[in-house]
Length: 155
Image 1: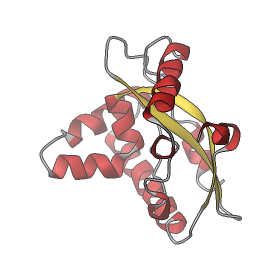
Image 2: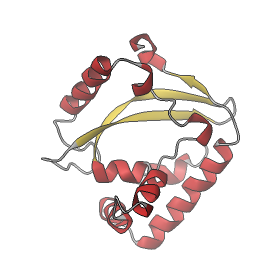
Image 3: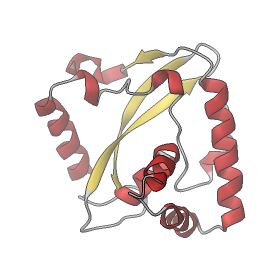
Image 4: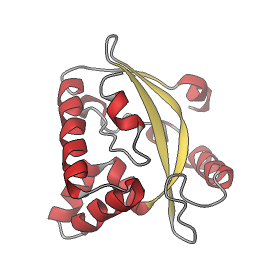
């Protein structure tokens, strides 16, 4: 997997979904009752705290974990993780930038969260973000086959 080595050492890494796969997620393919079941089960499995930074007593969001086969252009759903809003904004840093431009989010706070969780500095963040966007640009050139894996029977 391209870029995987650099991201493995980070507790919180940026994950940019290829542009050609935007809105191609399980949540959009299933009933809201089924999604709510997955969401609640995911929150329970993480003890109702963020699966990355351990934040408690905060609104959680259910994040899909994807694996990318860059040779065959197959995007496979591997599972779910409960995330606090700040960790989720880091995962989807592109959307975070859009929300910040609209005055709906403090982008510097998102960067500070990344730095705090990973125990790094702003230069590390900027380097990681640049590499994440390089991977995103390469992946966005292709149409991906979406493999819902063990979750395909839920739609």
